[in-house]
Length: 435
Image 1: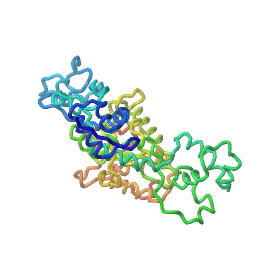
Image 2: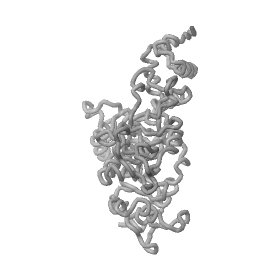
Image 3: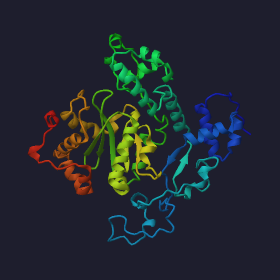
Image 4: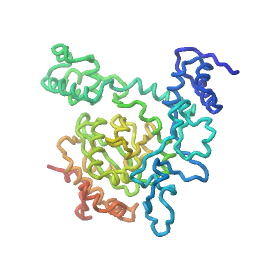
């Protein structure tokens, strides 16, 4: 029997992860794997469950229907092919993407050791979604976790808002952070240095310019502070996962991003539909994950499940901290999936080029550095009506609004309060929102 003796109380190495993958494919129990690596069973179990990756791999010659209701479902004609179709929707590969009542069936074996499909004897004939432990991806996720664990603000959003309400007004009066902490010691559980970091990172309403002495100090070179709600949010949602998933998805693809006004002030959340370059934008008081969640919940309540799921079926965004709570964005209040979130690779904005290019139209009206603090959603809707009415050579001189209306209908445009602007009336200058 092959025995491996490893040091206790150490992180798993790449070589150990390679052995785990190999032994899983050989159907060796987790207890034996733990014994060979001289680790506890719980360590191996946590490693496999947290770093396994989801796979959309199907089964040859089998319909990829993963709905729990597939056997008794009697639905017909969910797709547009109503004339030539002669079979029940449950026997079609498109069923899961089109049906609003879809509930995914998960293999019961994934809830028990070894928690993955490595070595499963029936994997080749299983049509359900699978999970695999792959040493390369597991080690990459581990290395990324090490980096992310060393950055960010170790504070919840509620605590951050409470801190802002206490500290920022006093700083506006000319008080220093040291003075505030000294005279309100019982109200703080963080250090003076942490508050200075939060202000410098734009997490509070107060700014460095509000503190004269800070303005005179030359800042040290360091990475900007980010506040990640879930540091493991990228696991299973990387750009590679997006490329693998998009090949089997029939819904729309949306690119999501943020446009900054002044640091610490109001910001815009933008959505661009790649099928027609139609863009939506929503004003937010702060650049926090909760503000993004609020926009999603607003749109979900406005459009309803069917329209929301059709429009925002698949979303690609960057690694901003405001997007680091994907489950709150993907699921409604009842835990039902309404969307899927994926992330570009770090420093790879070229992976969502459409939304980046369309931000140029926004910057014509709201130049870089301009504060958004005096804007309301009605102003943003007016701006987006002008931008979306601007004809594009790419679409045969049609405007994104025309293309969107053709694909999704005019009722959704009315709900979103985006209207057609006559070609000669379009304004793409700051004059449009001058008050």
